[in-house]
Length: 91
Image 1 (cartoon, helix red, strand yellow):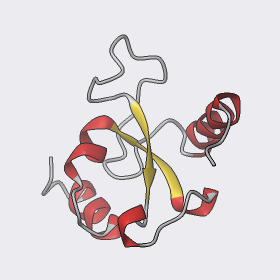
Image 2 (cartoon, rainbow, N blue to C red; image 1 turned 135 degrees about the horizontal axis):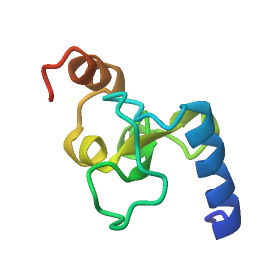
Image 3 (cartoon, rainbow, N blue to C red; image 1 turned 45 degrees about the horizontal axis):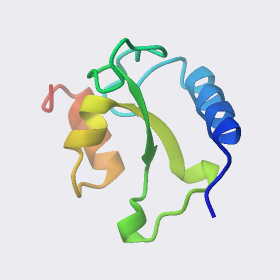
């Protein structure tokens, strides 16, 4: 069963504040209210352990990632991907 829209918005807002508005992978500031929700800097909900790999929707497995990182991570482990992005190899 999915969460109500209001609950998801509140969860996103809490994550945005906790992450200081930065992507969990590349550490760039995300635009909380982008003109285009598909812009590279729009925040998206990311499952750190992918659902395909047994990850859950629990808050400990959720973070915000910019659209670009969320779409380019692929099947890579989240920690490896974050390390690559922050070391500049993935920029």
